[in-house]
Amino acid sequence: MADTAGQQTFALERLARDVADVLYVDAEEVDPDESLLDQGLDSIRLMALVETWRADGAVIGFVELAERPTLTEWAALLAQPSGASRASR
Image (cartoon, rainbow, N blue to C red; front, side, top):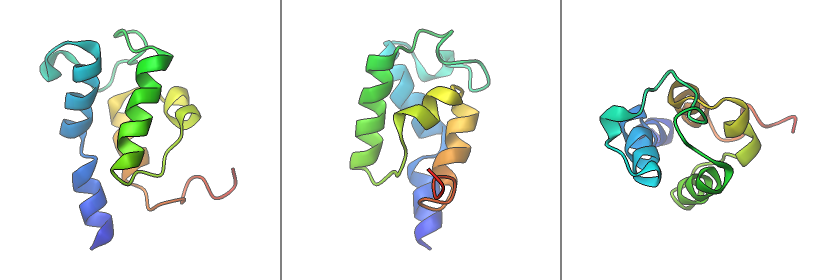
């Protein structure tokens, strides 16, 4: 049940809203499959997102998100059980 709650907390729609907030655009303007770096996201804004999501229970790091800079990839990373992809890091 905790996994389902985590998936709902970090659903693609929420991620799009959060990214749109830091980019000062509407969520509909954020393309989930295009690099967020190409859409204007910089490292300072990315770090702010990481801290916000960690405060809400995400176990994610800056580097993981920076290496996969699309909303679709972020949603997949955040949907994984805590530490599943990070056990070897």
